[in-house]
Length: 386
Image 1 (spheres, rainbow, N blue to C red):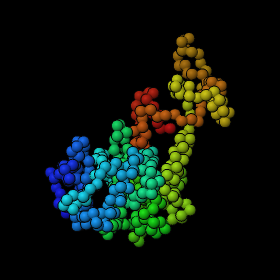
Image 2 (image 1 turned 180 degrees about the vertical axis):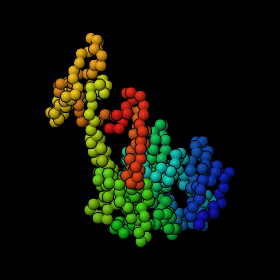
Image 3 (image 1 turned 135 degrees about the vertical axis):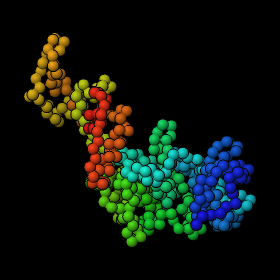
């Protein structure tokens, strides 16, 4: 079912918004791209059908106004900015928010299926930040799904998240419309959660997280959602435990809101960074990295791991003295820099994400892949693969 509204491109709403084009329509709203005249700004205008009430004495207008005022309080940079709302003389309610570029997370998942785990963490973290602010104000999304997450390129930063459609679920309920994701709502209820609670938003975020990691939508099981098993390396990781807690049926195990979810993600990222072990030779460390290693760090790490020796490698004279085939001598323990430490991958982030995506696909599909990494000497192939 779609709505009919008495508005069309070219109309001017209350003398302030020029409707430029229709972007889509659903059971409750017709969405337009519009121009805000006074400030010459492009915005999104959602118009409600007059059939769903249309004067200031209606209960629906009261619900609409309440949700609009609540949405206007949200200020987090990962939440869509809400500008205005109103009622035309013809009885059409409307709300105005910022215009976003990019694509929805649903479009991304339909195209790429599985996202690399670092990308999953980046996206989920931003969604959790948006939810955290809303939950701290007593606001819930109640209809969180990949379609309500927009991924943008903002000033050179890829996958910058904007969460949209706060308050829409309450308006749909006010006019007796079905929720857009009824299986998710039924699953939330089965898990013992109020669909209009912060915990329900966290549960929905966990389901989004699952689809990004596995590349499959949770299957239906008697009207509710049932996620299949996670890939082994995800299930056994802290990230897998975060997912299990977010979607747990046990109240004591669940995150109470977006801020608790975000804190758990912080723990995952810290553990991931700490677990990156790279054996670094002196020639592989640049001057800035050398300065970052304090003498105490090197001595402590050397004490944990005995020096390595290679009987097949003998010290030879410096080639400047005339011998061909010289190799660097084995360094003593006091001079060797061999540390468990984080070594940044500079300029190879995209390649790293590609490799991790392939690894996730291999695990999820139980099907092998061959990855060839090429390049000249010193471009960072070994560090990338480590």
